[in-house]
Length: 239
Image: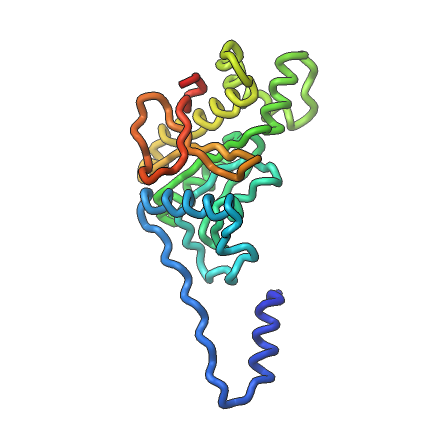
């Protein structure tokens, strides 16, 4: 179905004088072709989003005939963080897979592989966030031992190892668990030869500010310069 914008343009063109010159559509911005440039564009877009300067608040163009994303985003199903909005990207710019707590399964891995191998996407970004409901459910189960109903047990089983690894750390157990889970997903994707051609990073979204910070494991070199926020402790430990 044609968009309201397309319908309006069509109606305007039909009612315009025949001699009126056609207005050329603005060319889309060039897509990044390297992991470095892709990450820079995501972080620049996030800063626009966090400061209410988004370029694409209403998704400014119709989808291209074929997909040409420049990044894969592996994120959570939380309805507060659609990646296209968080990173201020337009239709077709990102290939997104979303599961509660960024839990991996074969369908998610196959989707990432499609982006990396078939679409030649250079960057995979795993995006965790504070106050994650899947993490909260996992911690509640570990604290009370209450049974987990139905399919939710899969999520708890996958997140529980990160929770157990960080339980003795001082501070916010939920935050430590989220960080450890996000870093584990990043490391699992990095270790898979199917994704060897892509650069894989992890990041955390602050729901209060809207800002995304890169998660960097101790000893890992900076993946991006230029004043972008980074968090250490990407292995779930305190920096």
